[in-house]
Amino acid sequence: MSGPDGQAIPGPGGTAPPNQRTIIPLMPGVARPRGERRAAMRQAVIEVVRHLVLKAVPPEHRSPLFDQARDLLTEAGWGLDELFEAAEDGPARSALFKALGLET
Image 1 (cartoon, helix red, strand yellow):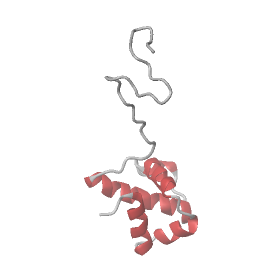
Image 2 (cartoon, rainbow, N blue to C red):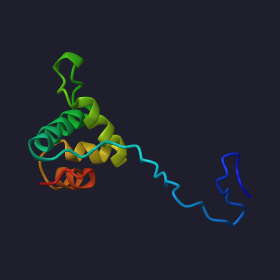
Image 3 (tube, rainbow, N blue to C red):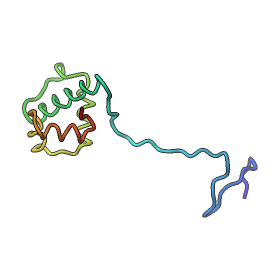
Image 4 (tube, rainbow, N blue to C red):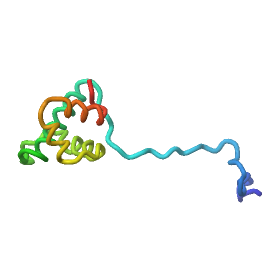
């Protein structure tokens, strides 16, 4: 079967005609930073965790990466009890950074 331009159109169970490009959808998510930006993102994550479980940070005092860090935490799917443990330096924070792809 051919289309109006003479190109073959695949039928049921058929294959795509040659010279067709495969489109790969991009998955939504937050890009993991590298280098110095990774350290800044780790600090922003700590700020968001503390904001959520200890004391709210007013918008005018938030890190420039605050929103991105919040989105990254959303992807982790951690509960408040786990985040409370990660608010202080220790194994829970290390586990969180590992889960977020921010380990050193």
